[in-house]
Image (cartoon, rainbow, N blue to C red; front, side, top):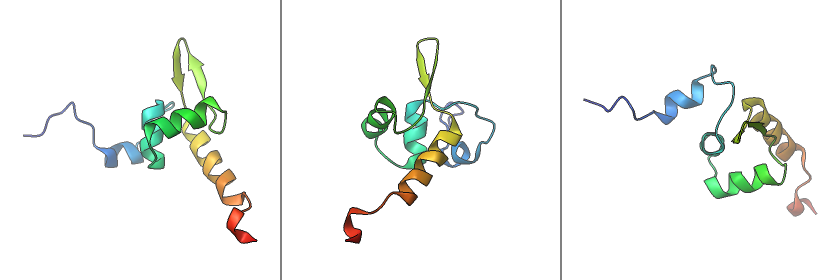
Length: 78
C-alpha cells in the first residue's frame, strides 16, 4: 500500500487549490533545481511574499516568470 504522506508530483501539478507554494514546490513545477529557484526568488525574477518568516510563491508568479522568459530576446538570435 502506498504511503499517504508521500505527495504525487502529478497531483501537485494539477492542484489549483494551492494559494501559495513553497520555493521547493515552485522549483518542481518549473522543473528546475531548488537552488536555482531560490536564486530567482532572491533576485526578484520570481515574485514571492513573506508569510511571517516563511517565503512563499504565488502560482501566478510562475506563469508571469515563464511569460517574461518567452518574450525575452534570445542571445542566440543575432
